[in-house]
Length: 154
Image 1 (cartoon, rainbow, N blue to C red):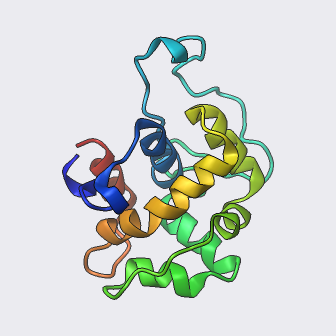
Image 2 (image 1 turned 180 degrees about the vertical axis):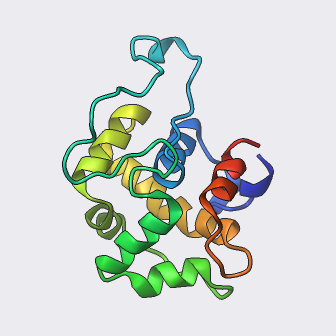
């Protein structure tokens, strides 16, 4: 996986977690080839996003990495988000705080797409996001959306 090696404790990013990260950061759902996922259509539905989410084809469910960071700042976790982008030590975020910042509708949607329980999803995201955002912002700058997307294509 290259860029994401050692980005999370233990260095292991599961496929459901990659789907969740892709959904949040680039609006991309990694299509699975397993039999369990064949009952769900691989294409995104063309219906408008439910109120409260800002799903877009190239901006993630929250408007990509920048949108996620804005949500965290709006929820009072700006110091934490800034620590992930900056070059210093990454501050942790509590799973419940992350869930409140992202919003229940987005968490529900990602949980459905990944097959993870909402609490397990939040636990994994709260563990992974500090390292992932840190890797995506090596110079303390939020990259352009296409640069974030290219990290998920490798």
